[in-house]
Length: 215
Image (cartoon, rainbow, N blue to C red):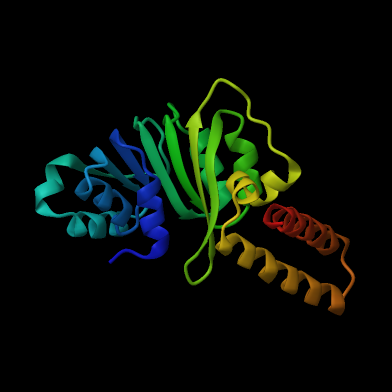
């Protein structure tokens, strides 16, 4: 059974001809895409041959003809309608996008850190259509974006916390903000830090927006 995080990632995938599962690890996202009929072909990509071997072992025999396994760092010359790039640092995701010969039409991303930098990079070429915080043992960001010729504009809060989180906040996002508020307040009680104080101001601004929506 897939975790809440992995289910969310698969649910966000559009129907496509070719999916690149970049940093595929055990291949769960790509395999589910094949089993659900979301993708006709999946290219499993990982820098680790050991991980690719696990993905190949996990891939059901019925879908082996629809799967290929490529050991490399990032997309490079791989062409795919959609790319899932998940479970790695945001700067690494940016590097993968920058190094792609052809950008996928749609990307489904789950950066582990430097998320605001990922958002800033995406809007150079993409329009973010979903950007949601989910809780699955810890808090994760799930971002979906489509190639666009129009430059998307994000506010400071949207860059920091995500477009969907600000426009349609979920309980998971509220819980994240309250957790951040407590953490940052505790830090400030122990030592003075302008950086932490600035982060806390943004968190409290987001909480105020949500409070007003609920009135």
